Image 1 (cartoon, helix red, strand yellow):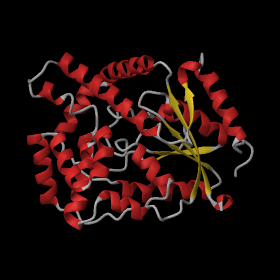
Image 2 (tube, helix red, strand yellow):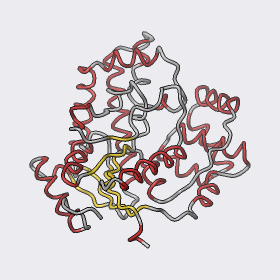
Image 3 (cartoon, helix red, strand yellow):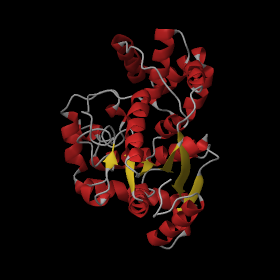
Image 4 (cartoon, one colour):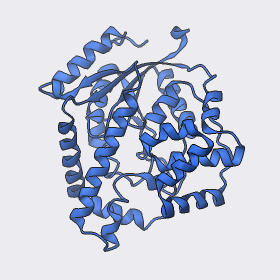
Length: 321
């Protein structure tokens, strides 16, 4: 029954859309704590590139699942489901509202839909081979290989173009003989323990979002992104953290292969494309209530609109459900 489930507020949307500021304001309004759903903010030291909120931006609101892994550690959706579920149950048990915030759609959907995954053994040699094929032959080659064994997964991943997920899908098939599609079908038998209310941010004028992304990259550089990237490349990096946008785009500059301006433009373009993929992912969920930032003249006006909607869903600052 829904009454026995844990009410969770989920705030999704593309990078640079304003999720952090909105989530902190709502956490203060509804006595909540924030659980991050960002696949890169989990890593220590990866602060500027991942737009990790500063302590000042967090306004003393507890943030969970940030800054708890070294950059060489591999992380998975299975681990995320376990870690986030534990955090949400703990928040709820203390009478607080769990607020799930982030742009990693796979994490959010898998958690809220009650999916379960088995970690399985990681074949490091196989992973090394697949990574080498990615470097030598490119992403489209691996997609073609995946299409030959698991066409349904390949079709879904053509849009997302996430190298980590494509390689993982191939690993699952080669090590278990079961496709990722079949594994996901088997996983969906578990009923979710959560009763989520989902909202997401967007812009009616896509160019306004892209302008915010470009400005954010410029601000990141002013904040010291180059030094952070330089330090990152001195460390041993795991397969998961290597997927972060913000470092790999700058590597040609450190290798004296491209100018800094060229790398900055690549970084801005990669971030804009990522935002587009995020919007495509979230647009498939009919349960999301969208709020368009450029419909409002101020952040306060947006907040008022969101609060009005949430109060119709049973949220009240003086009462926890």
